[in-house]
Amino acid sequence: MNAITAQYNGYQLHSVFQPILSLCHRRSVGFESLLRSTDVDNHAHAPADVMREAAERGDIRLLDTLCQSLHIRNFSAQAPEERWLFLNLDPSTIADRWYHDGTLTRALREAGVPPQRLVIEIVEGAIDDEPQLFAAVDYFRSIGALVALDDFGTGHSNFDRIWRLAPDIIKLDRSLIVEAEQHRTGRLRQMLPNLVSLIHEAGSLVLAEGIETHEQALLAMDADIDFVQGFYFARPSREINHLEIDGLPILSDITRHFETTTTIEERIEADRIAPYAEAFRDAVERIGRGEAPHAAARQLMTLARAARFYILNERGEQTMHVDGRSLRTRRIFHAGPITDTSGGTWYRRQYFRAAMAEPYRLQTSRPYLSSTGAYMCVTLSIARGNPPTQVLCCDIDW
Figure 1 (tube, rainbow, N blue to C red):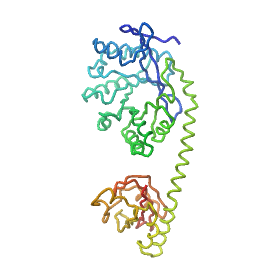
Figure 2 (spheres, helix red, strand yellow):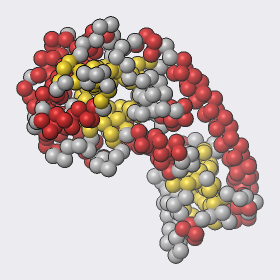
Figure 3 (cartoon, rainbow, N blue to C red):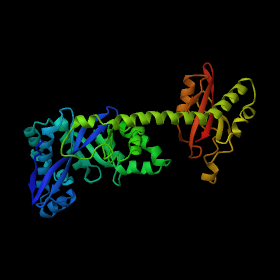
Figure 4 (tube, rainbow, N blue to C red):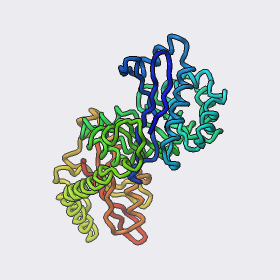
């Protein structure tokens, strides 16, 4: 393919494209356009250096417009119709509302690229003036383009802005994935799926950029991230060979690895829970035969990670509880103001409602932060009665 190039201030400008891949579809869904530049001696120069020179010369608008047209034309000449073009705009283009001059829509029209195939990338923290940001998003949507907020998760990130803007795609800053990879048992690794879930609830798809390792790809899959890009899959290239990208064995490999790893982890988790589930069922049966709850739960509470045994009525109100020896609240809160759960109500907890919906069936919650001690726990629960009048529960220090 004979790529189109452009000239600016002694530099020759080139387009390169990096694939955006869907983990579910196991193929490319788009390509991000990136700038590459060389001087008269064919020495490469960083795009940031070229942009800095343009800023010093007052040419940012000229260079940004030139790059937009260059990327759109090269994309149009190569890309299949069902793929998006991710196009970065300089923040000053948005701040000064230069996009209103029709240059972008004219470039799309001349290249035969429908606006619906365009994803405008806006750096999430680069525009402090929110009315400007909202006006730009409204404009790009009015012409039919999608909007992606880039670098989410860095210093200026604002969830309130996400709720109000409802961008089509959120691009997570690569530092989030790198940090989660480096701290295998850290909080960020546990929080990443919840962060993605919140973004999904706001109505946005999630893209993780800068994926460079197998472990990072698995983390993205585990967190339910929609799209990925990075050197692990493909480096930026002047040529768009979507058939080669879509046939990457790596996409199938990480899916199989994730399935295997998840199965193993689920088996390990089931093995960890098994002795507690057995002792918990035994306590429930003893109470059903008329034994006092404290006595019935005695063996259960001797297990190393048994944190609490408690009984709730049909309204979720706690009627009794026994603390286990593993309870960590006193090491975290000196006065223990939240360790006394007498009179508490746990109706809002999923483990209570699940038990009430299926009497006499053991329920196992997902790990969550206990509000009785700020430690991660898993709760076992069983409802008794038909209709149920009691829910017996056991918290396991996870």
